[in-house]
Image (tube, rainbow over all chains, first blue to last red; front, side, top):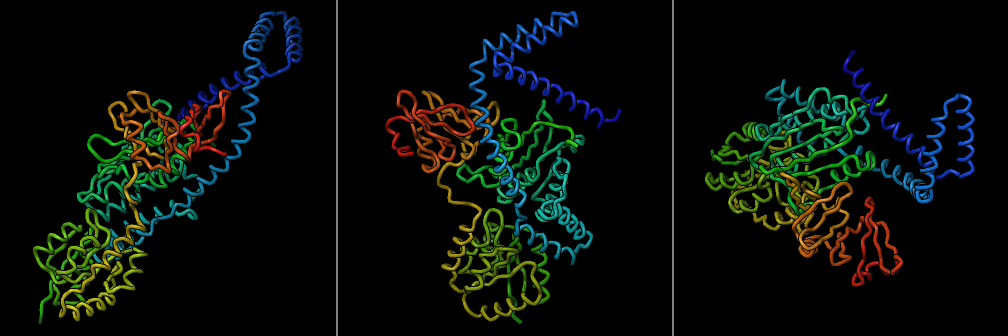
Length: 296
Length: 255
């Protein structure tokens, strides 16, 4: 069996389990809310059915279980459900609108003119002195623009692998410009490449690291991009050993947009954690529920 | 023939070399006596080598070109170089300060050099006020807003130091020893008192609603009255209700 088949099987098992628990709660809610009269009719039907099959146990269990739930949890659960239902309807509409807005904002995130002009100036210089290097930087710039300009962005870019590709192109350009002032380390196992990951989050974190962490530091430093699976959570870290976070500096639209999108996409199951490592610098980490494959 | 000395400062090596190469072409009598990779180095080297002209990149780590120019303008002629600084370029157009757009073309550089040759007879112009204006212009357009209010809260979590942006925080609640920081996804304890926080945070961002509670204004979902007539406040993304004390109830009058 191939690795991708095993991955699909594991994903399937996980989904089956969540589906099962959903079914149980759906049943629970139905019993809590249904009329006594209708419940009694189902009892009658189950008695008739089990009498026909000559096995009384399932009917007895069904009767005891549903009666118990109805008596113990009925009224409270019913009120809860009604309130929840009304709330949900209102919230779903707002949530959908906010998600669309946040996604639009992230995707329209522009290529910084500073970055573009400085890179073009560098290519201009390299054409005179080192044409092969110029061709390399030029190719990186094309790869970067292809995946970061909204008009050019191909569908299906929302995997960790694609996002890493974009970041590698960006960092290669920055290395050509900053030379020994920028070192880059990727510690990402290959198998995570196919895992779904929202677009332009990794890129925003890396740009932040360079802009606020390393560019202001005269000696420069290292950016480390790390990804791992921790239980059912995919953790993607971007760490630098730059000047660290200014406690009085605004965290910027980039981070706010990541937080907003994580919340809208995954609710409480995802978060953006920022840390100040003991050695100095800053570490940003996106944590989302782990899936091996994009859904077909 | 009179020799002229110059300094080049740019954080990107390729850009330094390019400017150097172009200068050799258009102004053979010019000696580049020093190359710097940031503002601090530029000021140091200029003090040591006393060049007549300094070519300064605007964005450099540590100290930028504008800041370096402020320390050098009465000692040498300043020319700025930049790849993209929309507002700054605008300011240059209207001022007496000379500038070059990267990548520098030989023709444009020749014009600048011609201008410099004429000016070298005189003492450097007093461009102090223009530099000050330019500096504040770049600040405004800027990457760094004024550092006034606290925007990040630090909390020790296990062995690591968590940084929580004030935008994530829903409310602070204190007891005698600790202050609890509540976000949509986490609950953290810090040692800062509510009094200290209230002093350091932006008063428009966080409101004191109780002796022991500071709430972020943007996170407030609704305020209602309970059976005993107390004002109770609910925030988005968190179930806890927060009491608004009588002293602070004026904040929510007529809401």
